[in-house]
Image (cartoon, rainbow, N blue to C red; front, side, top):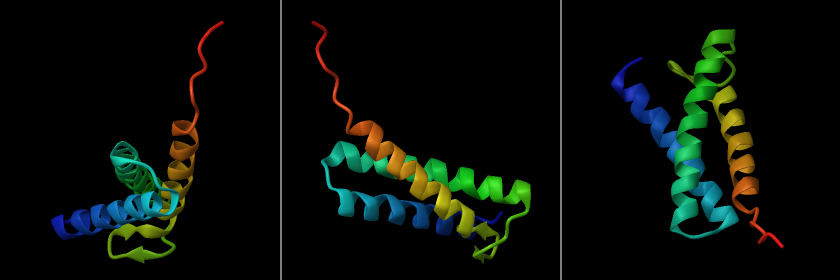
Amino acid sequence: MTLPAILLGSLIAAFYGALFHFIRGGGAGRLILFLVVAMISFWFGHTLANIIGFTFLSIGAIRVGLASLVTLVALIAAEWLSAVEARPME
């Protein structure tokens, strides 16, 4: 994979994380969480698509289709897990 493909994929992943933060809200900590989760899950989805040969919605060498789906699921899971509050023990 070329450097421009890596940069484009990272830019797409960062856009997904920032857009999700814009829609769901939260502070700077949640923005960082969403950006990190989006990066990791996007590249995991891309790698998974390469392994299984899934080429739907590819942009050059980047498998955007499955990567986007995995990113969306991971961001929803991260938002759900970060919203859980700990209760004090009685």
